[in-house]
Length: 254
Length: 341
Image (cartoon, rainbow over all chains, first blue to last red; front, top):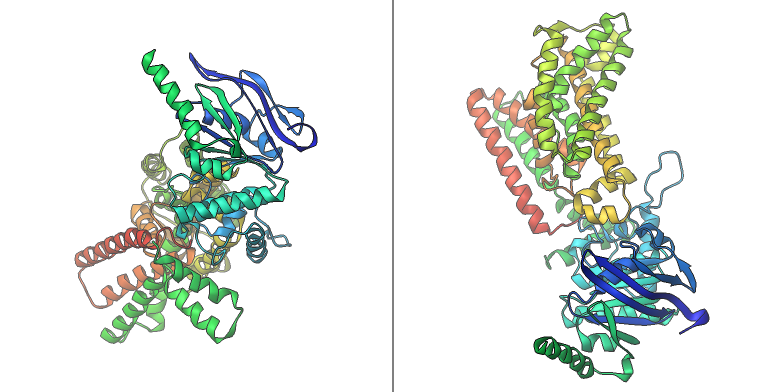
């Protein structure tokens, strides 16, 4: 996991909120074309980690590297400029607007001329093209996002991030509250994006079996630390559960 | 909500197979599903009814009367619709309506030519909108409260400036003609403003961002949309349109009344927008719908007057009609499930 293939790397990230230590020295790295799953209970520090990687929080100490270069992620915009983008299922889209308007929100294409009118036709065409390219199937890009299922909405949000040149995708619970068919849609999308080889994906998840199926590698976080790391193929949901159970027993005994 | 999917798929299918009879039929079908379609149907039915019940409805003189009644609320509705879409409202626009002609008159009394005095009055109205916007956004006061306060403040201002007395408008025949004296000049103003605002809402980033802010303010902020600038801009727009309408009405009538406009015209404007399908909860609305809603209210008002219905009864009927339209607005929006904007 070194050299040319490294997309993003974090070293010994520490973050405390008052007396609560959310991250106690977390390190991770993800390569281009790799999908990393971050597992862990509520309060394990997953969200804090994601918020540091997207520039929303700044770490107390530690360093983030993008393609080997140390970077300061002082704001969401700076992280975005480096191609790092977090996709939230329900926060990202405007339900009343069409798919193509959402895809181009605040990056609208304009017709030539002094009136600066929206180029609906070109936006429709390019949105359809972009969705087609990554295999997201919708009846029409003119559909309001509110008429789509949760899985489709998630797919649109991911497609928008990719279209706007995001290369390091952070997915926060991409399969939460989804039925099997819906989840299949997102899993297929993640697999196609991985196959491109120029995108790195970090996803937070709760479901161990599902995460092992989708990801190349998983890490387990507990109390702000990475307590276990493995290639997905080399571990199992049972093994991960056993580690967590051991912790519960220790807590109860202590 | 699942029922909405095939329907919308149908509609867009029609839009993509460019032209052709099939496309035309689908377009017509799509049109009937639009929020303002039901209002058009009701309005046409009302016109037919009033024409049958009273032969004088579709005469030139009466159409002119209706157009004059319709114009003022429709122009103001163009601003209120933009505000409602981005989840704000301006309750004080009717008071700006009354203030603007006095501002013009006062500036004119200093020897400034009428056209410049008109521009000065409009600039002052824009400034009032800016103040409303800055208070609402900068101090996080709900616009309902900000503009409620402004409503009383501006009323007091108008009464102070006018000393409570009406005045006559100045200006030559050409200027006063354009500004409202010619039979159809006010409705022409209204239609031009409707056309411009329709393009602004549907075909510019400003309109799209206004819709996005009302639909999901978090998503709009995430996308980097300048939320404050757009909201404040829409307050400025509404106050300016309110002032312009007040000037037009003053020129048409030939006198300036400190008690003109008021909350009545503001409510008519908001009702026009809402009857025309603008969502009270924001995120959706159309300018054309506001025009149609305004026409419907004008037709109702005029039709009842021709039939000699008591003014008190009329208020009951129109109040009920607005209530029904608002209730339908809320429930249809739910049925559409955040449908096409």
